[in-house]
Structure formats: C-alpha cells, structure tokens
Length: 261
Image (cartoon, rainbow, N blue to C red; front, side, top):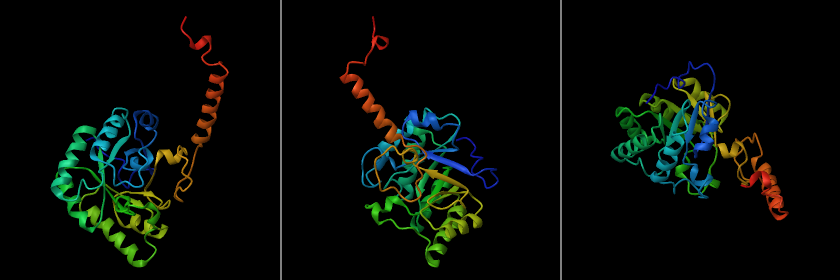
C-alpha cells in the first residue's frame, strides 16, 4: 500500500472524498478527489436495496476491482460489508480477500465498543483502517429510523471516547456520520488523526458524499439534509433520452453520418 500522507492533520487543505462503483466514474474522480470510496452504499444506489445489510463481499470485490483499474492518483478506500468483520479472525480473512482482489489503500469498518478489538487486530496485521462512527448504517434495517447523534452530552462524550479509542488502536482516520456540529468540532479538536464528515459540519478535516447524490442521478426525493446537488443529471439525461426517442420515431437517427456505406 502506498503512503497515505494526506491522512494527516498537517495536510494543508481539507480532504475530499466521493464514492465510485464503476471505472467510468472512478476515471472522472481520479486525481481530482483525494479519496475514492467504494462504499456499501452501493446496495441502495445500484441494487435498489432498502439498506446496506444485503451487500456481500463478492459485490464489493467485483466493484472494488473494477474501480481499482481506473484509479492512478487518488487514494482507494473500500467498505467491509455487513457481517464480514464480526470477529477478529473473519475480519482479517475477509480483509485479505478485499486487499488481494481490489488493492485498496484503506479499508473502512463501522466501529462500536465491541468492534474496537477487531480494529486493533486488523491494524496489528498491518491493515490501514478508517473507523466509521456516529450513525453506522449497517446497524439499520430501516434508514428512516436514523437520527442525528450527539445531541445529548452523554452521546457526545461517548462518541468522543470512541474516536479517541479508534486513534489509540491505530485507525488512520475517523469518519463521522450524522453527528451534531458541536460533537464533530469536539472530536476533531481532540484527536490527532483526521475526521471525515458526512452530515457532520464543516469542522471536520474532510468531507465525503455519495457521487450519485452529488449529481442527482437518482429520483429519490427523500435525500438526507446533508446532501447537496451540484448538478441535476437526472433532468439533463431525461431530456436527452426524450430527444433520442423523438429522432428514432422520426427516422432522423441514424443519419448518414452514423451509418456504414
């Protein structure tokens, strides 16, 4: 694995991260984004699942390997899917499968107190790990039940403690999902590894979004508050499809220009 110099607090600019599940998207992002994540959000984004619990190791292997071929400059991160790191032995076995097949620079796992031992074991085995805390989507069958964390002092302190323990156990960064601004700021100021936020305010050391949300690729109207659409691909693509359909119906396509003689 190459050196992951950008995952340091001393890195001059905030860290940018977006998801990619195909070589075409990875090629667009490569070198323009610091981290490219093959996330288990692939479940809902590509496969129409209601949650991430149905995402398998084979799915992550396939998409991870495909994305890897297109990345030359950015750091590659891949999620370990649900139930693949329940214990230390399974975690390392499955981590090796992903590393050998997809060649990521880092693996990301969702961390609770119970999973800290798994984190430490992977790190001891020389695996670069990002610790995902706050809202951990693999814990939910129904995403509608997700609520922002860190609103109470107890939640805030528990998350801070989990972030500190993640650092002590060797995590290269902490991803904070759906936590209050105060919580994100508190954690970022009290650990020496970077925080990467998704719905966790500008006070994190970096930000991540799902690429499909960034360009409004899907028609899902119930996007989380933290999602910002930078481009309405859905609208543009719909107009293109209508134009294509019209040209076919009117026999304008294919014209001589697009026909072999």
